Image 1: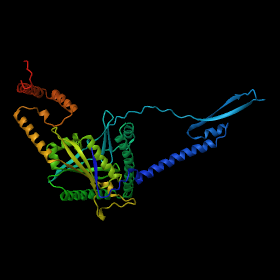
Image 2 (image 1 turned 90 degrees about the vertical axis):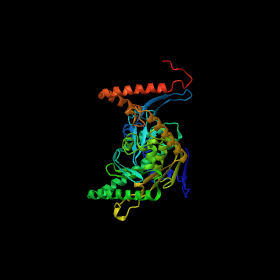
Image 3 (image 1 turned 45 degrees about the vertical axis):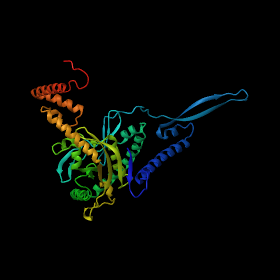
Image 4 (image 1 turned 60 degrees about the horizontal axis):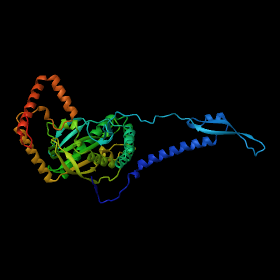
Length: 442
């Protein structure tokens, strides 16, 4: 996959220049140097043979004294020499790391990292809970519930660092730096809550007013920059005061993109809950999109349009098409009456609005429509069909559970379903007799 940046400013500032990251790194290095220096000073002050001084060493440093006799035939006399050597007694640790059962890691900003059973890293936006769905002229608005964030990044960084993939090593560095930024946001929000400690109702009201203002801002942006023929998704970040960090509050998906994927009013909630909107993109595409989200907070390529070329998009009915994806962010400027009052100003980046636009070649769309019409025609020819297969792209586990459920609680309907399946198989066997140069033996 090729990635291109579109901007007049070609300043390629590295992520290592993030002021917050360097600040924390310097503090960490200084603390390490301080510990090492204190240890060296304690060793230098050690008096050989003094048991009291040994107990004052850090990290349970102790010494052992032993007698060593050295003799030399050429020397007239031999001397007994006392030699003291310090050594460290430390607690033993298991070489093997404990295996975590967690498979999903939610990061602030609604970035989710999924770890499958093969220990490979996959990004996804699944596991969202939808409060309500609001259909607009150009888009469908999904109001989301907040998701519990992960506060421990060690396990995922361990998996990334122990691979032989350079991209995963780079991703590990990005995640570690993103953690620092998330901790900074956590500090700002905690201080903001403390500022309004005596006026919590006022803070909640102010937040609600800001959310309404952002929705109006996004709607105006859509009206000015998009049409009914565009394929796009817009995610709006907001402050989650309960978890003291940021999360996606709502998502707007264009009707055109929903129709392309195959999502309609009667099934959008079902599929959005089971698979997530971005799960219809390839895992590589999702990773690149979330990388762009993190880079925004790291102030790398801030505000620029990033082009992700030649990505795969899979529809509900199983068709895969090649698309280009543009990713960028916009910011809402709040009026003075909607500003938070705090000694530590809340930056606009903390409530960034992410825009993802999908660009598709018209010939691919025409080909997809042709295939769908053919499939629909074949489907209409078969008057008998299974209701269990009407849910689109299902995973094996879910299909198996459905079959067990039907067999246990609806035995008569399940027997009828099996009968219909056998009749369909017999019809297909008769339809394809003699087509492939072999003879059907009945």
